[in-house]
Length: 305
Image (cartoon, rainbow, N blue to C red; front, side, top):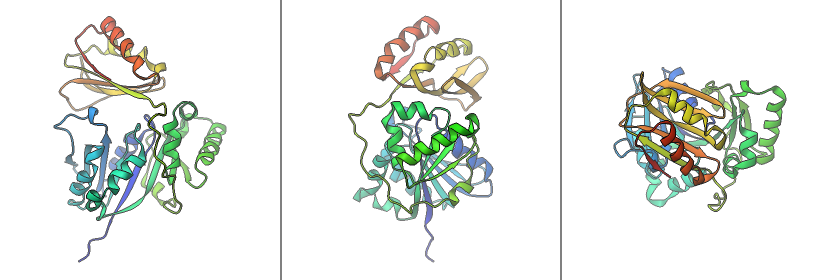
């Protein structure tokens, strides 16, 4: 019997757009479906023992975190479990064309032979898009390469601004479909939009174009929540996003900061606390992070930029 191809979707969008939340929402709200989700991250964000490990959820759905270059291997592992559909989350600082070229390499052709590529979905942060499109070329590049643009967190902006965002998106990519949802409200119904009915811009992102840098802080000590939040508060205006996980007095917490909004939620234990700063001013932020950490936290840490 010939096995039918597995529908495959790529989800892109700049840091903080809500990609991970959207995919976790899909997993949570569709317990009757067997869905595969692959989260790609730059190598420096992933510990060696975490890469390409497939996690089977209670309802049979699948989760996997991998480096971008390991994506073909992750797709092969995923198809063995015959999911009904698979989503690839492309890191917010990554070029979707780079992912496409990895999959199109001759030696990786086997990775896609079990899949039907349905299209690229770009998630747009309604609350921060106007600043991002002005400052970060990657945001426009991601939109140029999508078949469907979904304006996320639409509940945070006025209807007039929503109309402006739609106009901006159409200016960048006149052919793509546009939809909107509230934060965390991404659903499978959005997949009913027409995709792959038009070609996308296949030009690669120019490496010499100004692009945000990511800086990582690791610390093996238990941290005081109040001090960490005070530390983070100093860098909100100089970053597009701050994310990570910390061991506080009350246990492990995941941290997510976009603009002025800070969210904390309990998370699984890790080998060390880790904070990732997506800098607006490049590596110039590193020295300030080091100095303020010493001043406020006053515990040994490792900074990687």
